View 1 (cartoon, rainbow, N blue to C red):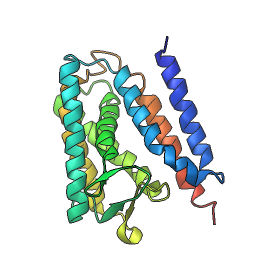
View 2: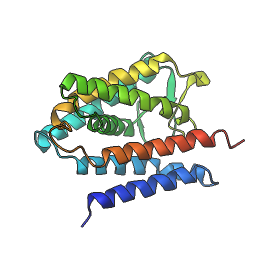
View 3: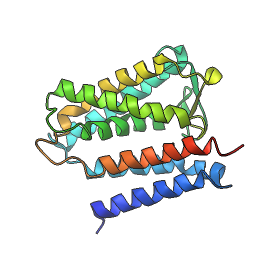
View 4: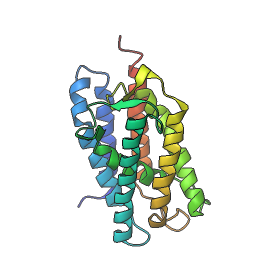
Length: 217
């Protein structure tokens, strides 16, 4: 029987392998599996979730979160006003109107992970959504330092502007606020047991990508 421990071990192993691959000649070929790893991460995170108001409420909110994220990314690349002036690269897979379809999945996974990591004592839906959006904006600081190196996206001129942080705060808040009613507070129910491991795995991967940029000529 597949258990939470198995899922934690699987995620940890895969992300460690992916991080190590960044330092090897297999770096570029390994990027072809990035979208598979991210889809698996989302699937396991959803599998481990115990919704507060039933699976139907959780499912439509998760799908709506993905849709909102995708549409805001679409507005972002078309106007350059929400996240800055950037383009998506090839690693995230198939694109629709210049935005990888997987970005919808990431804007379901990231806020779901962040809402689960809101600390105990923060119980108001508004405060939980704000806390999750701030966590995502802080996480994005590391992500943006590595995103172009792992071929996710690239900013024109290589400059990440304040618009990007604002965009992550706005999008993070909108998607988190949508998910909060379906995700129980840690004061009511234990948090998703894969939220913290996934956050740490992503942190490990992007930290490795940040470091390797300075080691490879």
